[in-house]
Image (cartoon, rainbow over all chains, first blue to last red; front, side, top):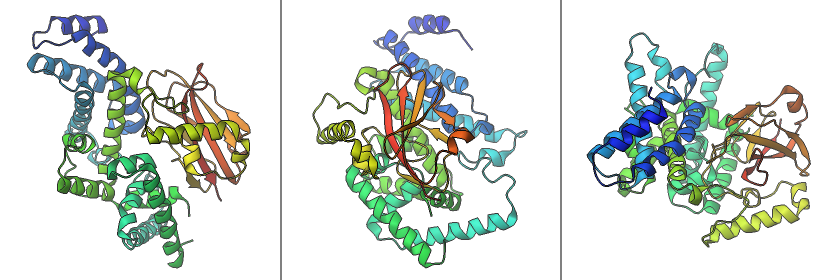
Length: 190
Length: 212
């Protein structure tokens, strides 16, 4: 890993299009801590994705891109670069023969299922199937907002993804979730 | 039957053997560059596949962080204050802030989410805003805020009484001590995350209900 001073010197020496390289360095400096925090909070430790490694890879890709073409939309470029780095690292980890591939298949299935009793797992599976079936019976307009909410998206995020106002998304989710509960209770689920 | 249980059930039941969409697909979705049919396909995949959903949430967090890094002044989040550019959503946020500031009585009962949620920025909290929980949460998590090195969390009961505040932490999550959890019985609660040393800025309040 290179030092920030050497990184900056390398950036300043780079040939390429007319571009404010100091601005790029500022963006990278600002983005770095946020990127590390996101990786720490969203990538389970067992996936082996190191925040510093991600940040360094993003820096390298931005430098390479600067030498090849102008970056017209830096914010868009930064986050796409970060996404690509994380996806590439996940694939690289998955390809390692000495690691447990199952543990790398998912950003979500980590540790949660470890040590589960078979009976409890079966009961959870039945409940999950009931939830899935009940969601399918919701009015079409509420289905997608409810599904996204169940995947962990907040009201504002659902609104953004579906092109709704915040109030509309919130209303559809509230009503949809209440309806979902009613249907599950009617099906005998406490 | 709380949201948390339903979310766990849904996420455990959704998955796909198909390869995950490319990172560029998520970016195109968030940037509005997908045609309607492809957009619908991708949203359907996200709704049905917990891994795809996690990747999209990651993309949204990274996008927000990148925008804040490139234009920090324009993207700094101070949810209790309106943004500079007039917009009807900001008027909602301003109204909500005023209501929160002057109406302690509002806290006496479960308020409408419009009143509580003063941020228009997409943030993800854990527990989710408005979550109904079977027991006191064991940890709180929030989105990293631009330029904030340390956070302090304040937890309030339904009467807006401060019942706990954390020491400053550098991480975007913290565990709730057992002693504090014992004080979180059935009822409505609210929590805010503030930049340590800069009270008045931050995110929230978020609310959750404990309903054993």
